[in-house]
Image (cartoon, rainbow, N blue to C red; front, side, top):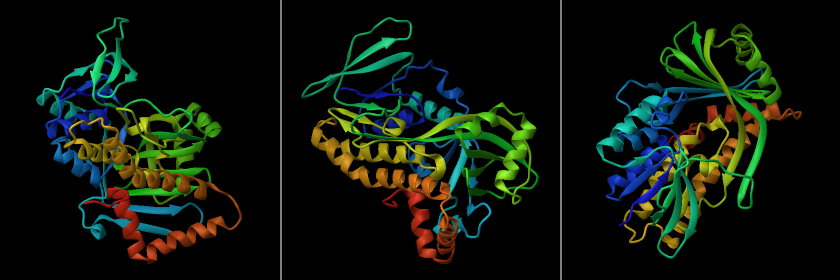
Length: 380
């Protein structure tokens, strides 16, 4: 069988390559960046227990210690109602794990190297015409030189974004995610927080002895905070969160704009889009890479015994099988942003009642927790 092409050698592309290799399918990776770029990413990842299990199957879970999340406290600022999800109630050691992206990437790269999976860095890929048996890829190196076109039975696009075009849903939230690492006065005890404020959700993720902060703000307010000094940022963060956690210092500030971008059909002729190339969600539900890894896992399950991995019927079955998880994750995160961000009279009370119901009804809380951990099908 000819090599399956993967465009993008970030965490998702590397993991997908290992999944394919594990099933004996030949694969080749392409990345537009230099070879050292993926391992220099500054992102912090929050991976579910389901994602840890996937990566553990690939021997790609980092050997360095990660920070487990054993409890998640969900509330809204200035109003009643809260709920707590506990790993012990779900029969798992942790609801999720927080780690620097570089640690995961380095482990994935080591496994890809051991598997002798070829990677072509500084190579730009453009999709060409698809035939009955292959799709042609045009490859150009960063230095402007070109190489022979690539013929592959299937191309997996694991980088890029979803554009506003026919067959895609795109909504700009007019918000930014403000990121920082916050030192705290007291130990976090592996407890994460999701606190809904009038301006947007504010998440605290335990990372080492600190918290990794994901703070949603309106675009104009976000720009003002980015221009402020650390002391003003720290004061604003404390006011936004409240007094349950006391912050003492911050560092590693960054931001990015927030939007919902969803490709309604993640497949085309001999092509599948995965990760941000298929969907970009608001970080409120923490699905991002977790959803992408589930997409990749089920794609490999769909094609591993197919005579032709790019067969239209095979890809159509994959797309149908992933629809529930993809649309449920997108809809849930969007509904949270819109409902908790609304200032309509009476909604704060309704939201409080909803959180109180989650706290009072263990089966409902269990249903939500399992789907955050394992996706819409709550496997395994």
